Length: 347
Image (cartoon, rainbow, N blue to C red):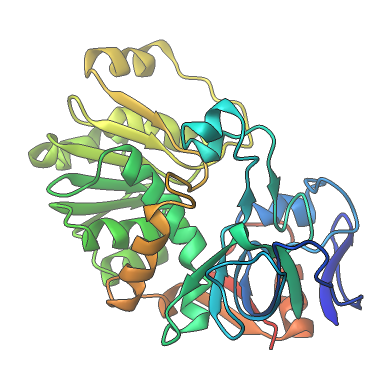
């Protein structure tokens, strides 16, 4: 079968590899339809961030079941599925409490083991979530990144009637903003430094947008003054400046959910740190996208938001290509962030 293999750092190539086979009783063989690049894949491809080389990445994928082991339940041949890439141990104290995202004994599809950037993949049945046969498989490949924002919203006890502020208008941020709107947020604001992304956020339903490259934190906070109560701030950019910004613009007793993964050290000056205390902020760390019962309500909710048209997927897609075109699109990133999702069409 064809697969996109990261043979070494900065070296994605199309290769013919052996088609995986069902070995364990809970194994499921999936014909991959669409597989997207995650922002976390960029360091794995370009910045020596992979656990090992060579590796097949891809954890945001949809597909069709074409084979299954003898112990597989509730999944049938021809079912349309998406990947829930974490496979926790289910036995540690964290897992027993349903804190699956916090399991220390996990494996992960497309990171610690071969992923979906191939024509076929074989995974444990727990790594698959069945979706409606009428679902669009291209749009369904976005379910996993949608659940990232939904998990933060879940940890914040929902966003209904809250003033939601999303910092970072990348794919995760724009999906989270749309999800918040669809889940009954009172208002949704988006902050970024890219005018094109802010214009897109407005098109996708954001009530207010702010350019933090042109306005100071104090100026943005002043414009948000009428919305300063019942705030939920979702920091999705994952850079030190935006973490500081999220604290500076937050209103009194706001929730600040940190979603973006930092790749550089964070230093908060005395004044900014003091704002956490003086405004009595609730700081929430949000890691991955799973809850109890496995894999969590985030996943069914993401499907519902797509299927009811509350999340608009096409404007977030940069390209959809078969193997060779996909590799060329990835190479053009040269290690930089994506401006829209790059998607592999595997079949």
